[in-house]
Image 1 (cartoon, rainbow, N blue to C red):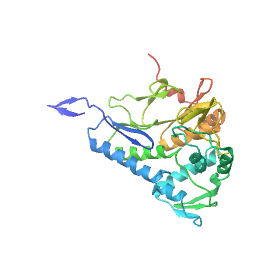
Image 2 (image 1 turned 90 degrees about the vertical axis):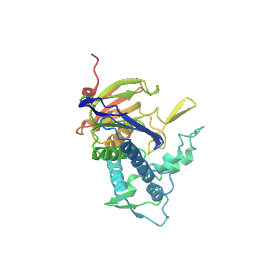
Image 3 (image 1 turned 30 degrees about the vertical axis):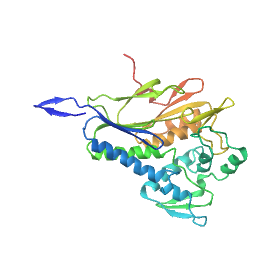
Image 4 (image 1 turned 120 degrees about the vertical axis):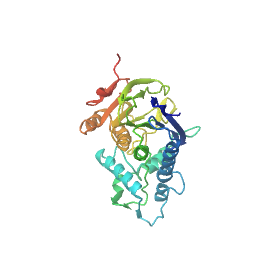
Length: 321
């Protein structure tokens, strides 16, 4: 892992890497242009500190406290990070007209996709949870969040990893890192390019296959690549695949012919939110949304194994020699 100059001759730096189980996934940071384990350690510590803010299940986290506020408390002060993240969540809730909804927590807590023997929740409980969902019940004014309903709770699961990746990138760049990859369990954020000047090559996982099996490979420089799919957190009951991307309107997983959506963007928080938003909106509306945005690209896979690209997305494909 050593790098540097030996008797005036430059010796190629070997990348250094560190992983940890955070955010319910394996987080890995790989640095290509600096040999400083301290930076790796502190970047993972930063990730952990954000998990302790945004987690809905860690008692004492800011989000946990928001969701378990006293019944009579309808207004809370937010930390700058939570206010910024909620602002993003509300933005994507609005532009998708609620297909994506940051207040989906009553449903996500009802469905337990990580249980040893997951089950489909009773229909009456799903129906009751749906009534509690509605981003319109939140009003954010700077750092003040007002709840218009006592039943409203928030879940940042669809956007937090992207926001955290962006903050980790900021930290690494302040330490002088110009070439690195941050991987938050499939949320990949590249800093710069490889030290030799070539792009990083990021594979798109083949749905339902081993993580090493890819359908395409992308050339990525200083961008984020985030995927959402029906094969990530899911279980099969009576021949039906139940996955974690829930429809806020009926409480059940979306069934719209999509298998996965991958977003390429400058900010990982946008890629994270858009991967879920575009999946929720479906192929046609999702592609239309991305094509209306600048510097954002999408790759959609439908259940007939066809791959669909938004305008400009094919330009990132690694072409065979």
